[in-house]
Length: 553
Image 1 (tube, rainbow, N blue to C red):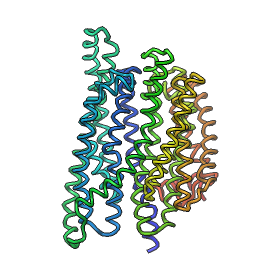
Image 2 (cartoon, one colour):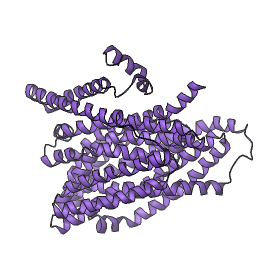
Image 3 (spheres, rainbow, N blue to C red):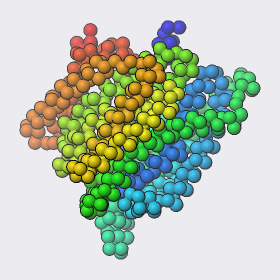
Image 4 (tube, rainbow, N blue to C red):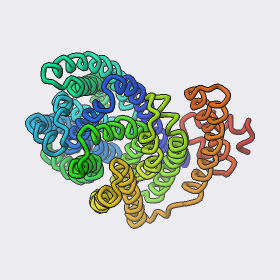
């Protein structure tokens, strides 16, 4: 009995780690394909590509982003009560709801594309990339329901595999389509007197075609898994009382009341990037900067800075997604002590990853940009150095959003996001008008937004769960270990660069040395115990290796 309880209290971390690993692999694939994509479309193309995705993401959030979480919560709550027939009804209702909401969002995007890209975003040529994303809204809405269904059942494997397949298809088609359309755009642009920008805009549209292809591949895979799973699931439903179900109207009502708070929270939390870009471009235009100048800055920000910092953020997103069903089940069952342990474990795990990623990204900013994108410019390196702390604050704010939603405190992330959004806009406008920091104002203001969300969410978690955050092992030890790692990384990089005169080799050796140094410092300072390591995937192997190296006793 005790063993089962212990297993249940930490299984969300194992499942979250599976999803985190898949998300990390997907982000790495995404990072890899952005290298040739950037080489094809350039910073101007990244500006069109990034703008299109920010517009698409807001409509995705409004239409279906909250569906996986809502479905996950409802499925988890009903499974914990043994109501399998109701779970099946939730799935059917959610699939119909997702298809309708995705279709509505697709129509809005199609007919509103010109106004949004030209008037609001001052990036009219991004319209080609925007319109290719229209059908993707429907595909992703239905796919999100399926992923939320499996997550609610406590298994992340279907979501994990579908994410990897999605990104592989996305990578292949994006690069190929961008190459083909770049050439077509160049010829079209020659006729219109602007071959360079039209080539970049068409190439960006090729990249978004890859996004749609990847989503379709993931949907087909998830559909296959769902059909196979439902065959066995329906047999187990026959043993259940038929009366033990809710009506479809009540299920839709539950979906809506679950979706709305998550939707508002997610929209406000994620729309800051779109608002930041719109504010930045309009102020830059007012200050007299040319569109090509602020477009290129935004291209670096969207196509290099954000791509790099989003890789470690995938872990926080996955742990947050896996925490919601577990916390919901714990709260429904009244197990507050177990819920506190899950909060502590998830926070510790995310911070252990976030600190070294932030320090490593800051120390090796220019070497990484040179290795991946061939970009040795000072502005790109400074952007990554200034924005590296965003990895820590957004990892924690993403996780705490999920924790509050898992605790059924849906209004808290909404309230906190509104406060953070308003305050960070004052910072953005002040830095642009007062200090003329151009794109660096966006980087700093974005980090401020994440930091404010951390503080406000932490206060809400403490108020509603009674959880008291442990500081030393969760924050101080990872921070000290990462600082020591940063010093070693810098020295190793300089040494190998001097000896071999190769940035790529020096960067790779520095990263490997950083991983080993951080692990050694973290364990030496007792940042993780053997019992905590054993809860991680492959934890037994990791603990055994640490003992051989005399890092664990």
